[in-house]
Image (cartoon, rainbow, N blue to C red):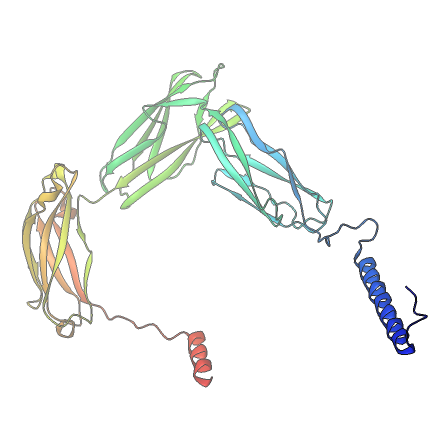
Amino acid sequence: MTYQNQSPLFRVLMTFAALGALATSTVGQSTDETTKPQAGQSQDAQVGQPNIEVTPDIFDFGTIWQGVEATKEFTVKNTGDAPLAFTLKASCGCTTLTEPKSPLAPGEATTFKVTYDTKRFGKARKRVTITSNDPDMDKIVLFVQGEVKPLYQGSPEDFIKFDEAKVNTEATQSIILENQHPDPVKLMLKQDQKAPFRIELRELEPGRKYELRATTEPPLKRGWNRRMVWLETDLKEVPRLMYAVSANVTPSVFVTPATLYVLPPVAERTDYPVWVHFRAKDAIEIERVESNNKLVEATLVGLDAKRRGLKIKRYELRVSCPPYAEMPEEPVVVDIYTNSADPDYQHLELKVARREVKRLEPNVRHEAQGDAKSNK
């Protein structure tokens, strides 16, 4: 197209239009060039991140004898391009871990050891969990597995347990230990092992069969009495064996609750249930119930029929108490007398007391927040 035959004004306008189109084209080209990635760069901006690599991925110690050490070393490497931070956690106290270095710089590696406690025998399948800041693999689970064979097998159990021990009564139990190893292994009782049990080891067949005997030494404490018994061997790989001995001293008669509390909200006389528990085989009877204060009345309701056939039976008592404001300052004692053959359980006490409910102090932080809100 030519502008020779056009007016001067028209030619000026067309010239400005052409210059504007050229400027637009140049700006677009410049923008495209600045947004193009340089050589060696990806289209999207790259942000560094850690990458965790753990070897090996399992600890299988196979089949080993009781007491033989089971330890494995693991390596953790950061193959990423940002610092790697991680923590370890075992699923059981029988699995111990050493402390590795953390965090790790890019390309850096560290090691840690996993040890399984082979004093206990049987099949094992435990876990070690690695938690890291690797966004693609924030949790890794390493399995610890294998089987520990007992050096000596106990019969009827691999422990001694007195289920119904008494505080002042001596009792004896024993287990037979038989060698499972192809070679004879001599057992010896470790000296200077403390009460509450007297421990004896008798050899039945040299290096093959033993009797482990435990006798309670009164007085025992109420509840569980426990002790680990150590036996020494002449086998270098397994220098010691450990067996558990325990006695559970449960009262033949006991009261729940041990103390009955009357609280401030109670504004009228109220009846409370109280239970006297006993072992069914003891056939306990409650002879009488007495209160040392007339304000508190105690009555025997009878045997709880819902507990027929159970090893533990119970009597129900009804304790009637005045309102909180009328309760004496000193605790009231309700005396419970039974026909138990054990003098320790012929007389039981239930305490009835008033208890003041303490109001929690306002949280300082909440007070400050409340003040801030009120000032808005």
